Length: 314
Length: 246
Image 1 (cartoon, rainbow over the protein chains, first blue to last red):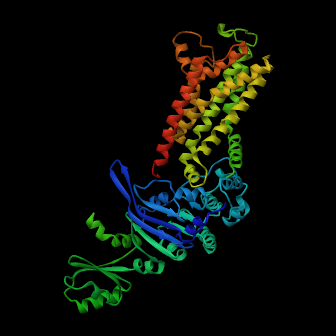
Image 2 (image 1 turned 180 degrees about the horizontal axis):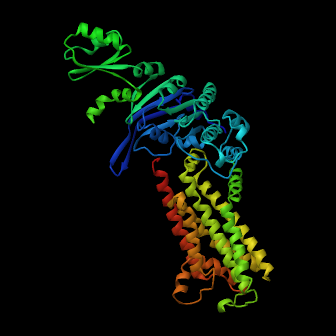
Image 3 (image 1 turned 180 degrees about the vertical axis):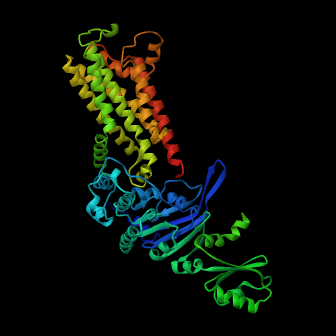
C-alpha cells in the first residue's frame, strides 16, 4: 500500500489515540444512564496506557466507542489521525473484547488463519500461535477449550493483524495467577516493539506493573491521570477528613505525610501517604480541627473520593 | 483481504455442522424414498400431470434447501449471542462480505441437496432433457433468494436458543402450506399457497411437464418476499449493531 506524502506526514505527527469530549448516554427502563460524560484521553504512539476504574466507570463503553462498535452521542475519536472505522479497515487495530466466544467447528489454527485472511498484512500464523502460547492446542476444536485457553486464543486473534494499536478490555478476568503472568509477559514483548497499547483493568497492580501511564475513570469521567507511581501514591493511601474552617489548603498540603488537600465548605480532605505523621502534625498546628475521620482508601474508595465533589454536584 | 480464504473456512465449518447436514441431506433423501418410492408409478400426482418421483424430487429438494438456506442465515443468531459479530466488526471484513459469504455457503449446501435429490430421482426413474434439468435448477436457485434474506432476518430477530425451533418451524410450515407433501391445486389453500415462496419452489417441478415453472404471479411473489425480507433484515442488522454491549 502506498501512502501519499500528506498521509505520511499526518501519520508521523498524529498521536496514537485521541479522544475528545466523548459522551454516551444509555436509555434504560429506569431512566437514562450517563455511561461516559465529557471524556478526554490520549495515548501517545508506543505508549502503554492503563484505563483504570471500578465496574461501571465507563471503561468498556469508552473502548467500544474507540473501536467503532458504538456511536457516541457527541465527541470524537481518532486513531493515528484517522477515524476508528478507517484505522480498523486498514488493519491497524487489534482488540481483545471483554466477553466473547469463539466461532465453533474450527480448530484454533483454522480460526486464526481465517481471521488472518481478513487483514492486509497479517503476521505469520505460526508466530501468532507461539506468541499467544496456543501452539499445543492449535489442532483442537475451539468448542473444546477451557476458559483460560479461550482467552489465549482471543489474544491470538487480537495479535494476528500485527496491529499498531492493541486494545485489551479487562483481558485477565478469569485467568489464574500463572496464566496472568505469562499473558502480561507476552504483552510486554509487544509493547517493546513500538506498539501503542491501551488496556482496561480494575486491578491497580496490573496498571502499576505494566503501564507507562494510568488514566483513572469513575462514573464516566477521567478523575486522575499520570504515571502509575503517582497514581499509586494517590490511591495506596488514607484520607483524613476534618472540619477545619479558615485554613488555606496550601498550608495543609505542606503538612508532613500529606499528598494533597482539598476543601469542601467547612471540611477538608487530606490524602495522606503517612496518615500517622499527618494527624499528629495537624492537631499540633490546628487544635480547632474536629469531627475527624481517617479512612483507608481502597481503590474503589479512592475513585469515589476523587469524584466526591461531583457526587455532591450531581 | 482474502475473501476466498475466509469463505473457505466458513464452508469447512458448515460441513462440520452435523445438524445442518442431517436436515439438509439425510432427512430429504430418506423422506423422498419413503414418499415417492411407493408411488413411483404414479404419473399424475393429484391430477397435476406431474409424476410422483418428479414432484417429490423437487418438493424435497425445496424442503432441504429451505432448511439449509434459512438455517445458515439464522446461525448468525448464534454468532451474535457469543459476541463473535463484535469480534468481526473490529476486523476489516465489510458487513456486506460477511452476508455474501453466509449466503454463498448456504447455496453451496443447497446445491448439494439438489444434486443428491436429482440422483435419488434418477434412481426412481426420473428422466428429463438436459434443458429441463437446467431450467428446474435455475428456478430452485432463484426461488431460494427470499429464503436467504429471511434467514438473515431470523438471525437478527431470534436468540441463539430459539434458532433451532424457529428454522424448523418456519421450514415445516412453509413446506406444508407450499405443497411439499401433497399438491395443492384448489380452494383457499391454493390461494394461500400462491402467496408463499415455498409454493413456487415446488412449482419448479412443472418444468418436468415441459411447462414453464412460474408465470407472472410466481415471479411477483418471489421478488416481493425478497424485497420485504431484505429490507427487514437490513433494519434488524442496523438495530443490532447500534445496541450497546450487554
